[in-house]
Image (cartoon, rainbow, N blue to C red; front, top):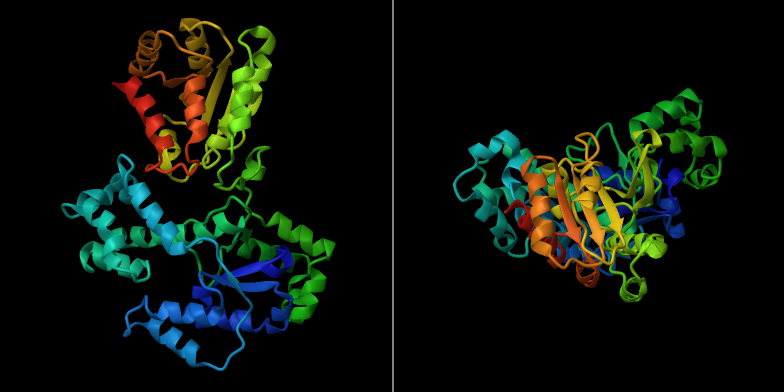
Amino acid sequence: MAILAANEVIIPAASYFESPMCAAIIDELSPLFPTSVIRLVGGDANAQDFIHSKLATYDETGPQHTAYLAAAEADTVFPPFKLRARSATADITAAWLDRSAAPGFLVEQFGDNASLLPKGFLDTWQNVPDALGGRAFTPDYAAKHLADGLLSRAIDSKVHAFINHEYFRSFANEYAAGFVSDLVILPSQHSLDDRYGNIQFGRARRELHATGLLERISTCSPEELLILRDDHDVAMVLLSSILPSTQASRTSGTPKLDVHVDLTSVVSALKKIKGGQKTATAYQRTVTEILDQVFSHSLLSGELEHEINEGRKRIDVRWVNLAQDGIFRWISQTFRAPIVLGECKNYTHDVANPELDQLMGRFSPVRSEFGLLLCRKVTNRSLVIQRCRDTYQAQRGMMLVIDDSQVEKLASMSHAGGWGEPQADLLMSLIDEVMS
C-alpha cells in the first residue's frame, strides 16, 4: 500500500535490521531495489557502515547486538541506502530535554500516575541522555536508567510512547512523510505524526476488498505494483484512507517544516509602512507574513479576516494551533487555545481599552481564550499591561500586546519553537508580565 500511495517508501534502517518481520516484508520486494522506490534510511553513508556503528550502541548480550552481528556477517543484498540529514537519537534527546523543561511536564506526561513517581524523578529524567553514554536511546535503556526497572507498567508505557513518538516524528520532520498506520500485527502503541497524511491500513484494506481490488494487489508481482500506482480506482481508494486530521484537510493551510527563513527583507518592509487607516491592510498582511514564519513550528499560516458569529464579526488573523510540544502546546492547554487570535492596529498612538475589548470580545471557551494584539508601538506599556492583567484576573482570557520592536526580535530568533529557544523565553516573559 505504501508503494501504491507514495513516490518513495523509506524504511528506518534500524527497523529492517532489528525486525526479522520487517526484513521479510521488504525482501519480498527485492525486484524493486534497483528502482530506489524503496530505501533504507539511517545516519551512515551505507548499510555496512550503519550496521557497524549500531554494534557499538547495544549491549553485547542483547537481541539488537545479535541482529546486527548477524547482518554484518551475512552475504545479503540489502535495499538501497540513503543517508539521513537528521539524527533520530539527537531529535529524541532534544525533545526529551525540551519537553521536560515545560511547566507541569510530569502531570502532562504521566497524568494521575505522576503522584507515584519517585522523588527527584524529573532530575533523573533530564540526566538520561548523559547516562546512556552513547548507547541507543531506546525505551528499554531509558526506562532502566529512570528507575532501574522499577517503574510501574503504566509509567513504563508512557516512557515507551514518548520515545517512539519522537523517533518516528524525526523521520516525518526530515522527509515530510506520512506513515502506514493502524497495522494488524504491528499496532502503534503511541501516536504517530499525522501532518503529512497517514494511510489507515485497516480502512484501506476494507475499501480495497469492497471494490474487488485487494486480491489483485495481493497477488501481483512487485513490478506490477509500479503499474498499479497509476490506476485511478486504486488511487481513489487509498486517497479516501488517508487520515482526515492532516493539516491540509483541517484548514486551508499547508504543512510546514521547521526551517529558518531570513526575514530581514520583510521586517524592513514592515518598518516602511506608515501608521494610519490607509495602510492598515498592508500592515496586517506584512506582520502576519512575519509571524507565519516565526511560529511555523506550531501554527498554520494565518487566515485573514476570518468570519465568526455567522459573519457578524471578523477576526483580523486566525492561526490554527497544531503545536505538539514547546510553548504553544502549553498555551493551548493553559488558555484553551486551539486557535490563536490576532487583532492588528496600525495606529500612531497607543492601543487602549476599546482595542483590548475588541480582542477580548472574540474570546470564547469553544474558540480560544488567547490572543495577540499587534500594534506599531507602545509608549505607556505599564498601563496597557495593567489592562491586559485586569482581563486575565477576571478569567476572561490572556492577551499579549506585541509591537514592531518585539516582532523584529522574534523574527531574528530561532524558529525551532522549543522551551530552550529564545523565542519561547520572550513569549513566556510577555505572559508572566500579564500574570504577575
